[in-house]
Picture 1 (cartoon, helix red, strand yellow):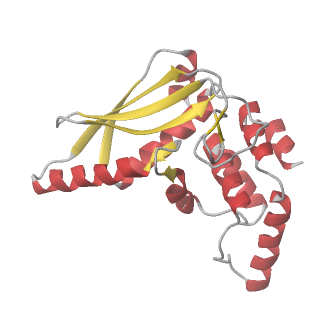
Picture 2 (cartoon, helix red, strand yellow; picture 1 turned 180 degrees about the vertical axis):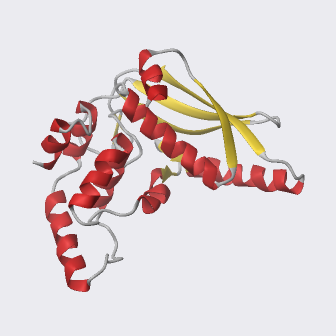
Picture 3 (tube, rainbow, N blue to C red; picture 1 turned 90 degrees about the vertical axis):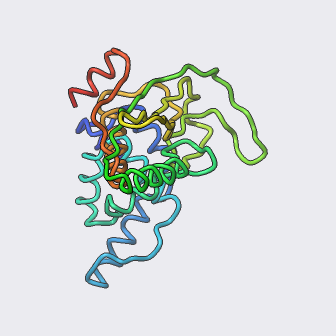
Length: 227
């Protein structure tokens, strides 16, 4: 079993394994189909990834880029390149994940700063906020389970107890902007490091320079910085 092998090799945590199990129906078959097609064509096909494979790729990369590279190499590029994942990470309409509207606003700040011939320097602030454990139906789907913006929607997922929120604070101008959040039940240091690195890379792509990170002194955050 692929997920058990990742756990034995310490590529992913129990939380990551639970999320992957929730979205892995049909994933091995989908991967082998892509491998077979790529061999016939002699290159990586550019057809659309199935929703299940997309959820699996996003979830695996969120919890462990190292595991993602291992699986992608093992299945001979059956998973998308990490550059494709960057656009998939962003969500709109207030869904968990990195908020696409916030990045549009950041681009406007960058354009204005360029017109004034100055860079955009920011501090990244992150913190968890306790939320009530509760499942509610919003007319479209059940809300309240762990949600990291990968569209995994299964009732066997744990119920979220915290919202991990990310916010940018400008250091050479007068604004601050929430840029995303995740509904979680704790995260390991490696998982936090993966999440922060992904965020930093996306901010770098819009020419926002993060000079510092502010968070509390929890052991998980210390482990994140060590990673």
